[in-house]
Image (cartoon, rainbow, N blue to C red; front, side):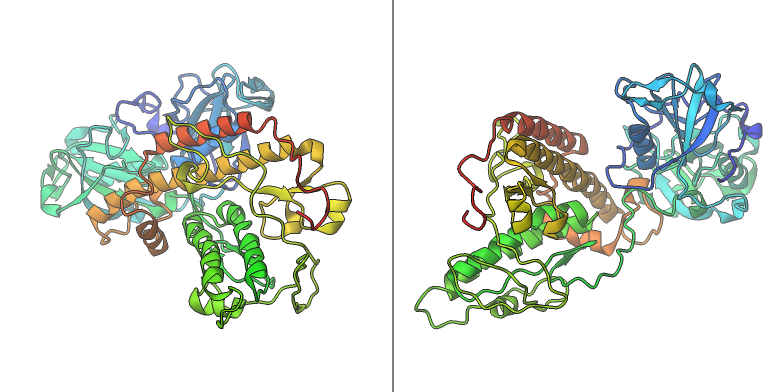
Length: 540
């Protein structure tokens, strides 16, 4: 574990945990990330052992919620005190105590420990690199930036313990280095600020606007009026910030369309209207899996995959009608609508009742399956206040299909229903008939998770994408930890999906809509039974 430093040089840093007038809280990380590791119990006598105190209520706080908040705000450590007060920081300014000193259960999960009275249960994000060798030489001058937002400062934490009369960039960067902050900034000739992230409304401006000489060295400039010279040390940032997508493992499984970390399983061959419709059904059942597994920002491309699946129906209507002398096959469809990925049609083994087909087995042999109807039995809720309903879910994130089980041995083993949440059917959860309400509840939960991870995340990123477009691409330093996933792929994906409309909500409005839809989804699906469907395998 990287050492948890006592701030000997920062004993007078009384501002840190209460200076919320300067600070803008970023949202918690909604992506999957490496779990923080328990680092012990630490004293918090004055509430300043960790820099940042969350404004989130402690009533339902858990270790997971607090670490997500710290991850989203770019901090290395998370700490919980007094049943669930959440703190974050890059270093810990408190004495280590015996583990038993932190014994209060968390308000949100009584099985977890949330510190004690003025005592912190501390957790570390070990995706941060070791920082023992970092010096002020690691801080790179990123130029002149605005600092006049109405919602907070560009950098959150003023270093008032420093003597302003001798202020220099090196004095400021050393103070921020000791605090473990990746950002350091000098302003108005005499002020020093540190930050874990940069404020989202911070803008790059011409260097001439930072023209006030430093009080400690007139040969150097220290920002200007509402202008700040910012220095950045990447060594103090996580190697896997919120939104980081690990390189997916190579797979030998056949696939035809890829989005981010996810690839589809092959749709079945077709040669007439009936088998073409079943190919569309097999394709459409994989959309929820794409949204769940593609990761950010690749999940945005799942909407293109969804459209690609729907295009099969149009192709069938044009090319596969009886008596028409046109080429109706999977290969022909791929020539019209080339998939993203390998772009090569793969023939798979499938069984279609009441329709003769020719199938080719691709080694190794896979389980023969009957494509179920794509329409699920669970109900998409409606809410006129938030504007969602059937065919128009929040963020266009569909409710995963709960429908007939396509695998014969599972169906005849007593589980006639399945929630299609994975492209590989054998990895999807199956359900007995009495457990249909539980299946719909699981579908509601997956829709909610994808709504947050894709739509709400997209709304947050789109706002900052517009900021980035205004700034230009000449700066390598991210505007905030929330922009750590900046990439040409993200820009391209947002370009395709937005045009200023698709991610039109604020992050908070988006998350509220996702939650309201989830609550409504649970309520309207309590009485769903699946009566009248999925009684006999292959006869839907």
